[in-house]
Length: 478
Image 1 (cartoon, rainbow, N blue to C red):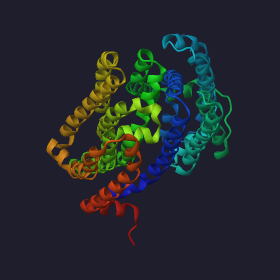
Image 2: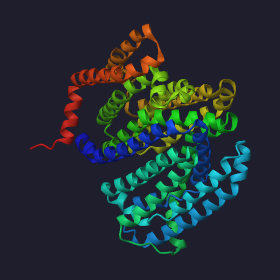
Image 3: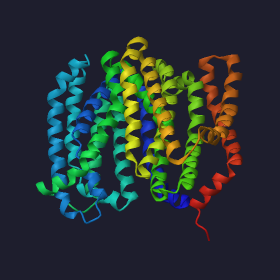
Image 4: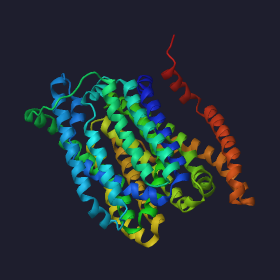
């Protein structure tokens, strides 16, 4: 079962990793060319567009993917709804720009939001037949769609950042990526949609969409509430520092955890009711996720300042303490998310909803007072507490569901923890003797790779049994 799940998820893992590496490279380059204020203005505009899109989500695509019967007769109606929704969202975003600028006390947001509104319209024009890629698990075409968007966005943004040196490089790059996705969707599938509206079809698909809508709203609040509060209380420059730190933390931790979740989700569904095998699968997923992400988290936490100076430049140094807190909180959220996918897999989505709702409540209670009192580190601390609450509640429910004790859970990740401390913590301790940031940032270019090589070699020796299982998954038996 584990072998089948890993083989099935290998494509998903590699495709998502490729896109994320492209976006991470874009972020590092643009951070050198643009200011935190530029990122903050763009961040505010995207927060608002994301808000409008979340509260108007139809769930029709997800409903089409889940339908067992043929969906050809639904596609024109689905495309028509998407076009109408995109047009309405573009009008709302354009009209609300002055109010958004007033709320955030940032006049420069208004023209940026009006330009970004065009992306809502373009997204609605994407070929509705792309839903077949998900239904038929056609990962090659899904890969092309994602890469076309990411490459177009990155290339245009970087080129214009060199020429313009302003937030408009981000804006035009974002529009270029959205347009490239729409154009590529027609190149990848021969079917051409037509304007046709069938109310009966819409009502049928919307039954699924109501639950999808509720989940999306809760996800939006959990992902963007901190950005809204920071943008309002602390301004666009602080929001830019925060969002770049947050993206880096996500690249290092949650992205890995979510890719592991995509691999294990169908396995959990097949093993529902077999608690012994579920325990083994969940502990294996946790062990792999922690082994990959914890050394990255520890290195980022210990060497945050020189790493920020090296990767982003001196103008981003204020992000270092924020990055330290966010990368830890992102690890906690990623571990909690592994439990959430277990709940979905065994057919208890209510447990996942409860865990996510608890995180949002803790965040909502702590975010404003901590941000007001301690600035950006306070906001990051609120996120840390919320994610810790999410992890604890998720593990409590996992324990009740498949009888995993805290001792089993901690013992499972102990080897990676001790090995990370030995290979990364010890070099940090000895480097304290000569803590000169300008020298240390260059020493890290050889210190961290050597630590990584030692860590991987030792981990491969300690985890021979786990590696054996993964080998069987990728190497077909003769």
